[in-house]
Amino acid sequence: MLFGTADVEALAAHAPVMERLDTEPLVLPDAWVLQVTYEMPATAREVLLPPALHPTDPPLVSWTFLRCASGPFGAFALAQLRVECRSGLRPRGFLIASVIDAVEVGRTLTARWGYGPRLGEVRLARQYDAVTGTVCVDGRTILDVGLRDPDPLGPHDIQYTASMHLAHTPRGVRLVQVDPTFAVQRAERGRPHLSAFDAAAWGDARIVAAHPVSASIAIADVTLPKLRYLCRPDVWAFDGTETL
Amino acid sequence: MEFGLFFELSVPRPFADGVERAVYDNALEQVRLADALGFHAVWAVEHHFLEEYSHCSAPEVFLTACAVQTQRIRVGHGAVVCVPEMNHPVRVAERAAALDIVSGGRLEVGTARSSTWTELGGFNSDPDTTKKTWDEYVRVLPKMWTQERFAWDGVSFSMPERAVLPKPIQKPHPPLWVTVTSPGTELDAAERGIGSLGVAAASFAEQERRTREYHRRIQQCDPVSSVVNDRVATLNFLYCHEDPRQAAATGMRMLGVFSFFNANLLPTREAYPTRAYQSLGALAPTPGAEAGSPGDPRGVPDGIAIGDPARIVKAIKRWESIGVDALNFIVNTVETIPQADVLASLRLFATEVMPHFRNGR
Image (cartoon, rainbow over all chains, first blue to last red; front, side):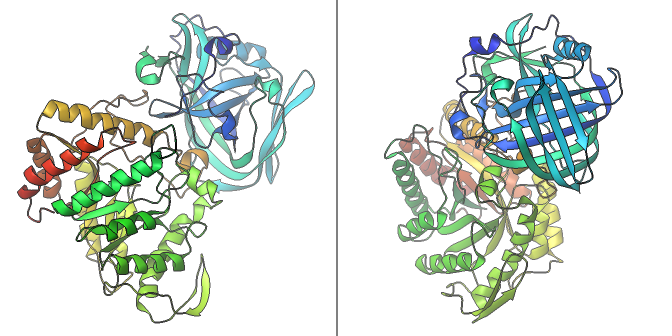
């Protein structure tokens, strides 16, 4: 039975602050969602996760782009880096870092769901036979990822896992379970590609994308949820889960 | 009702020298006892790369040992993975026939297509095509076993005419099964006239619905062979003890550990969006907890054979009443239960539970 071994204090040093936990759901209509997944070497599978979480075998890293052209926040694009994991019996992704291109939206996403994104340039571009997501921070490209030769899938063929966001909450440092729902209207899968990934710039140089797994693009109504569960990061979920 | 043992051959960390050997030795001792007690079958999975959860990547070797150390118990591939990168169909037919000979005609052949990214990705297999290749395998295996010479021009493989040797003892061939993880696969089994080897826990109501539909559909099947196997088996967990509280404490510890390891597998669908895998393929009973919570490994699911003999008899009577023909038991997980207690549980089950059932073996 493997557990994460990351030092919680070190992780919490960079964690965002959430003053309240009583947020209400919010729908982001017609959002583009690009998700690209790679395998990581096994050497990194435990060290990236807090002890509450368990690594997958093989360990997986995923990049998820969310681009909204309209909706309650107006236009924005968000890129997330997550390490796939388990919390108790459930599949989850541990949020390592995120970047957003709209300051105010970033503040709201942090205050209500603990995303804590940095400001940067986030682009999600669609060509006929490819989709590319790029992230630039301080003028430097830290991610260039995407898919090629997309083929249609059914709306229910894509599974998105809930996220665990480490944050300073009114109850202390906690993993905040953020489980958006995705009402997918259109979905495609393609060959994943990765042209640039600066792991250190994303907060942890130990993250290595070793082997391509999958890439998908979808249009979906994404509902950011009402928060239901917190989890202490230092003990496993069966003992550390708190209901809101 | 028939009773079997079902082995994942799970190995506890740390993987020190001798740990895997001990797991295999304990399993073989359980099989020898089960044979003496009158159990019907021993099944072994084929899994690859699944650390702790299953170190049973060469089940034909383990099952050969089972066969030569026993007299009556049937030996079952539970199941051969019908994916070309893992097993060429000719090799499946050859190994199965040899095992049928070595066992004296006691082989059951389960077929499967693998459900984890860990395995499919490890062999660079295409998840989109595994259902097609499985379908092709179950259609050609009976031909390889029964035709003097065999040639094929197919989807996943082609070959010129050859004699596939040896031939199995059982005529026309050993019973064929398919492992049923995803709902609906039992209908694939029915339509092809092969047995439904359930390896995912289902509620009584769900299993009853599936079993009824299986039996209805198999009446109009287009069999892949000249014989139809119309049996339904399901997976269960066994810990039997006179003291119901001790039975629950020990048995549920095993089930909780199994549920945890099972939930920590990486289903194909989670890593690789595909039409070909519609469910996550959880084998453990649904944890009794609110959806979305981390789960509760301590709740006792209905129908699980954990308890004192009276409770287990009652549970199995219910399975029998809904048309299940066989229960295959996981009796330990990562050596959670001491070997002596596992053996005592099997003995008590044989003495106090088996006689309540018609076949009782």
